[in-house]
Image (cartoon, rainbow over all chains, first blue to last red; front, side, top):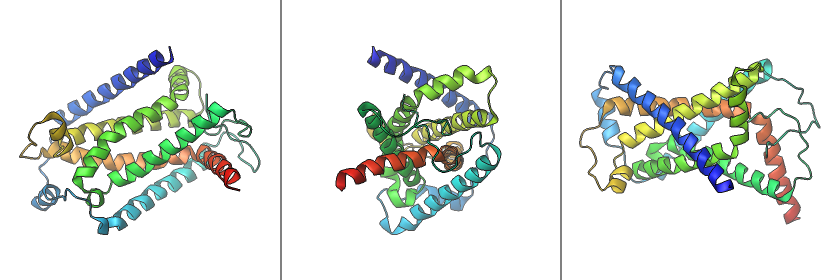
Length: 97
Length: 172
């Protein structure tokens, strides 16, 4: 029964994903996007297949960028959308059911 | 995903604790994977593509664990709701759409993983429309993932405290 329910949910999620995939296809076909410049094309074609650990700083950069987006979002959501007080000691629901 | 709802986090039952732990570590893996997927020069194209395919399963698992929230919010879509709930719903829907589009476009421009799975030769010419879209959607995913983290901040902190408190208790 549980397995059936999970399978049904996977089917529903797959349908939603298929819908978005279809919409993406329609968008790409309907949009005339210019061919990127030569430099970009060369860079995209020559991306290395193997990992380059010397580029670890890029991982740090992306993490910082994600953190900045989270902090920016946090400031906006906290200022505008806070429905209940989150003062010290107030428990938080972990939505486990 | 409604992190502000109130509930006691102490004295969780065993299956609930297990579920929290799995959800938490799955989310951490998903987050780290998203960051690695943004840095193709670090991971290399080969790992990038396989990680991109693995993320499909992680996203599905993440959504299955959040199913009760998805079902409730979808049912309440036309009912009166707080601005926060509505924004959260559209944010998550946009994130799902962006991730789906990024994965789909990634599959279409794949040079290693998809040709290996289908035993076909990789396309000699890159389809720039899909490549450009893949790049744009990846940037949107990063932005929306940041907002997703922001709106679920309280849940995240509570989960971190809960998971690591139990870890500390066991090691002491």
